[in-house]
Image (tube, rainbow, N blue to C red; front, top):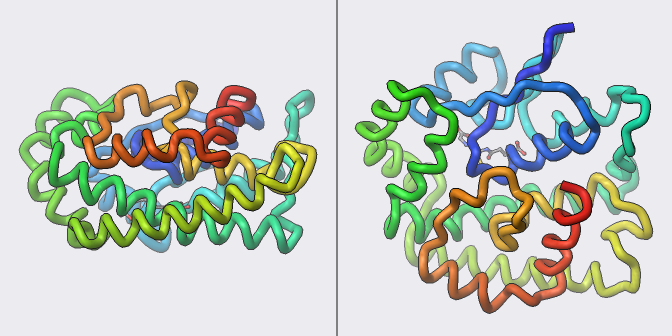
Length: 248
Ligand SMILES: N[C@@H](CCC(=O)N[C@@H](CS)C(=O)NCC(=O)O)C(=O)O
């Protein structure tokens, strides 16, 4: 079987979610960073529903979406790997993952870009340039202001929007802090599971764990940095850093 290829943006927490699951399950794959200039045309050429990353291409399948990639990964039988408890079959696990994907993940991204793309767009460009070839890096530099406008429109970014997302993040952190306050180490009990991996990866832009494979390049804008400092000791963010230390 040809080695599967995982297409990602280095900055994306949804991409980190899929990448971590493949790493955790010891699945052999090749990582390919795509340029925000040309990814859309390429992804569409794979015949998937939309242009979002991550996408995993195997011998026989093209899988779009981090959850689908984890579904596939957990079905690969890899002898000697730790396994990932697939509590997605339980309604509790499914509901938590859905909320993390649809609410937390979306608002963490909108909150971060609502400051970063206005205040330090060049720093954001740098992380999107991870592992691109020189000609792609040059193209990215010239196209960047257009891409920023496209992202601002597409994700509905701005000061008000950033504040709204910040409020939602606060509420979601209360929810997660509550789930973690039940005298057990993981979201669903005593064992590290898929739900924990999903939560930790989607919160990683707030916790900035040292083990994250790309965030050493991430520059945090001042307003976000002040919030991260204020949130730093929240139980859920301490827990994310712990989980990364142990499992990433
Ligand atoms: N729910 C999806 C979200 C994926 C997603 O929103 N990806 C973003 C990067 S964070 C993306 O590729 N955006 C560009 C696009 O959709 O064209 C997943 O889990 O994979």
